[in-house]
Amino acid sequence: MALYDGKTKVFLLSYTPDLERLCASAMRSCYSDKPSHEIYLSADFDDGQVKRMLRKATEAGHLSVVEHASLTFSISGVSRALTHQLVRHRLASYSQQSQRHVKLKGEKWYLKPSSIQDATFDALMAEVNKYYDSLLLRGIPKEDARLVLPNATLTHITMTTNPRELRRIFSLRCDIAAQWEIRDVCWVMLGLSLLVAPNIFSTLEPPAALSKEVLHRLEKLAKEVDEQRNEFNELKRGNVFEFKTTIDLEHPVAGYALKCT
Image (cartoon, rainbow, N blue to C red; front, side, top):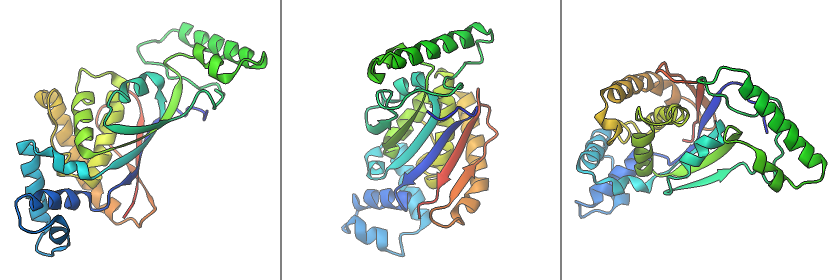
């Protein structure tokens, strides 16, 4: 397990090229005698029409059309408590670091919440680590030794899903009632999603959409993304973009996007 450097990392690793044009073409084909490939390739189908189609889709709840695209995130430096929540969103595919095959190592292998300030927490983690190592030295298989590890154990996970499911995830996990760690991660995921699909992710659904605080934060985030989009778009395929945000988070979360087109 890599050492925890104090920052959770969210990496937009892949996304459907021309994501919004693809989804808008699919929607337009529902009301046209032309199939989606002709609409997609037509010079007459401009960015303004793409925006109008996607706004109509989100306002009408016609969100099946955005299921044609996908986004893949690599998320690291997060606790098992977070991933236990994340994988409940079943319309997604996940690949997570295996505790059966990967030995826990290093001193900073766990996440400590800011609400716990006393040294007892760290002492307990040290004892867990010591006991875990002793089990392995006794020949206990990693698949059994891992049972002593807590929810605080750091992990990494790869997640692929469609924009409709992402909107649902953000609408639940960006809400003020969500647990702080997954809320922070999802706000950065939302910022990265806005980079490649600003129209699809410009709004949220309840419960997040019912919070003035959330809507204010979303407006601020969208402005920050708009200011960085040209820099991202100018990158050559294969280059990595570092996303920066000033929205309030409970702990540091670094965001990156790989330019895929």
